[in-house]
Length: 539
Image 1 (cartoon, one colour):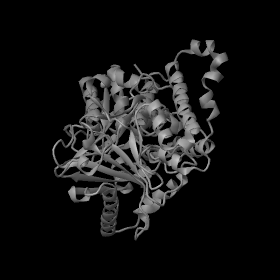
Image 2 (cartoon, rainbow, N blue to C red; image 1 turned 135 degrees about the vertical axis):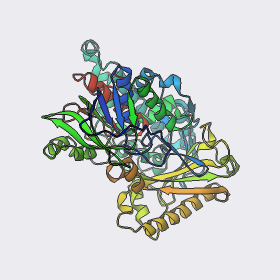
Image 3 (cartoon, one colour; image 1 turned 45 degrees about the vertical axis):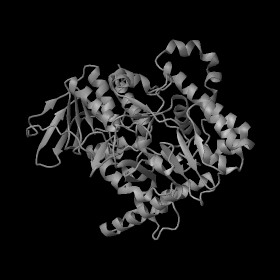
């Protein structure tokens, strides 16, 4: 998957006819975070790797690009965890990322503003601190709040236990009698939704639900279908390990992975669009790819292909007679939500306008129930607009990001979007609608932080259509597949032998999901008999 607009390094390679094919140990289709992670793990293990990227820059959504004077973070937010129980930490350690890159602590995880609250609610870092803050603001729900934080912590501990012992069969045999007790948090909530658990704990008191789940759009727009376990794990990870921003932006992470691949003798090439996955019988054997800006077609061979793309996109590259079987594994899955985002440049620090935290959730007055998030995705299709959407506001100058250290300072507003909101509109109609929405959302931001609108010197809006174009995902999906309560274990292996999913579509979205997806794919490729349930790095 790839996101456009950012500066990237393009490796210029002389034109080569399809007959002059090269051979590699593995080829990665796409340079998003999942594909780069998988490729870097294989490279570190001694395999010769080729990464092909259709855009002119590398990193997918993990990209920083410059428009005018403003360096814009495409990934929008921070990475969770990095504590000893974080299942992606072994991957970062195997690659030396934990030592090579500075991770900046964002402090309090986020602030939540809603007319339902007497004052903004601030979620601090740390389980005990977060529980105490929630009880102080919502004292009538102290018992439910204590149970909530105990519950999400127990879920994450159970997952960490499974990850730690994923390859230790003796441990599972010796501990079989106690496993139901140890894994009870997962067994208990395996079919529960976020709505169901919060209703059990807080009844019909919606304010506390909104305070605890204001960042729902990190995952979905529907709390009635969001599995509680898939919500609990990252929430606990943020609280236990904290939130972190890669200093220099997510591009620094992508660039470091590229350097690992190249230092090991691999190649990373931009402006190369894979047209065909070459298949011999039931096994992948290579790819045919074309330069996006020239008539240059090549074939490259490898026994391992890593697909950093949506399954539907990979299917279109396969021979016609292979597509149905390939897609059958995903026929019950829907793509995740997409997003809109507005990048703003500020002539003055955000502190001047009362901003005190890196991340803030702003909930509009009409959103009085958690279930109301289901309506947010369609709002940008309303013309004229009738209601403001809930949105997040990220003030990058609140921490030492290494970006825009002098004015303009970077801010970003983000919310849920659907491709249908923009389908069928002319270019002028889209431009006009974007301008209206930027006016409305920025005016609301100014109501929360008086004077900030007057300090905006630059603004630009991306929509689900933008993400669909640059990420090349169905509907502009940001987080891979939409979460579902029926359960979905990571599936790096596909119906085509030698072809693996290495992206958010492997198991989950966000930085953590993409990194784990790449780790699972690399592990499956190097150890085909290993199960996909764990999260340790292949080595």
